[in-house]
Image 1 (cartoon, one colour):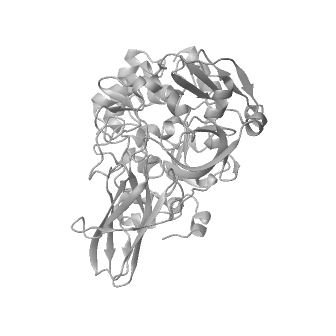
Image 2 (cartoon, one colour):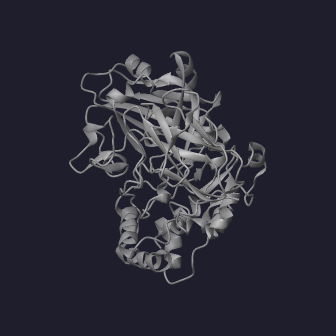
Image 3 (cartoon, chains in turn green, purple):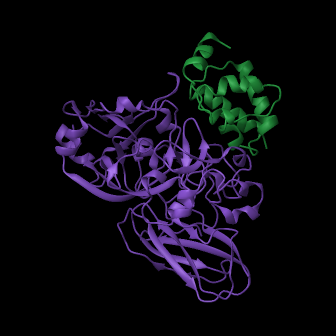
Length: 91
Length: 408
């Protein structure tokens, strides 16, 4: 995790108690998803969008977050995130 | 059917959508339809934001909360039950909104100006009108096949009595250059990281100058709730919520079409698929067009899908119909799955941008299963398609409404 992200997580995400109740499936890639995705949004977006997105569409969603929304995620991490999402929340 | 009092008493876990319980796992979450994505059932809860009653939480951050259907069985939606929708999680500080100013200017304006809330209220004629605010993606969660996004059911909409200054009066007093083509609107909400494009939208100048377009500071006789855009928001009657900028802080007249993610990529429809009479041609291309006006639509507020009711007794079917402002001309109801249709009785016409209530009483329905279908028609001759019109954003879901009931 970059220093930039670490700082953001410490300062910009005072997660509400209720938000912290949202938990994702424990599987490889889980920590990477939590660290990156919840910088900008709560994790409930992921189960909400399941289980119907094929791997191709999770790929498009993650790259939309990077390209359109400017999420600072490198391609190696992006691939691991897509892998986690399509294996655990795909359809 | 639950009374308003039952709803008032409801908390997370109460039986808002009790008839749904027979419909499988999703029914365990109050107010959810069974044809929504199954994963939504794991995260949706009834929860109250500050100043709001318990609404159906779809996402915490940014907050996206929909209005339970029980509140939509009325022509006006209460402020504290009105749906909440944000794109980006940088919500404005409440204290900062107390020193709110509206900045006016831009290359298409004759000058620049800043207005205080008091000036907005006193220097311009106050106008009141009833209008529906509906998210472009209302019922996205019912798209078949499902598409990514906030998985709304029926409740990303509401109707309110809005009070404010006409955009036209404010812009005319500022001075509009003949080169002006669009009005660019932005609010006090912001992205979390600076790389994310701020939610900024534009309107074609002709629509900004529509006599019904407002900078609203009143909602149902009260100030706007924080989560609905306090202290002032844009109101564009007939057009979907994407143009109704909340916490509006800046209005700029510009001489070239706005080029950003929210105009060029988001909120677009495939060309030729939807009946959009009022179009935003300056932002269209050969393949896609911006979503603009709401399409003709309806909602069954009673009975609920899956509900069991007594046979042999009069059964009132009722609900709402609406469109982009042309006016509802009729609502057809079928109680036999579409084999025969009967016109419903239309309720009072409270304005062309308001919900039109309708009802129909079946004298003595026979025992057994019945499929109720509802289809509205408007003055532009448009009606509801049998199935949602497929599009990548899952917008404009105005499919014929259905409720399967059991009479015993």
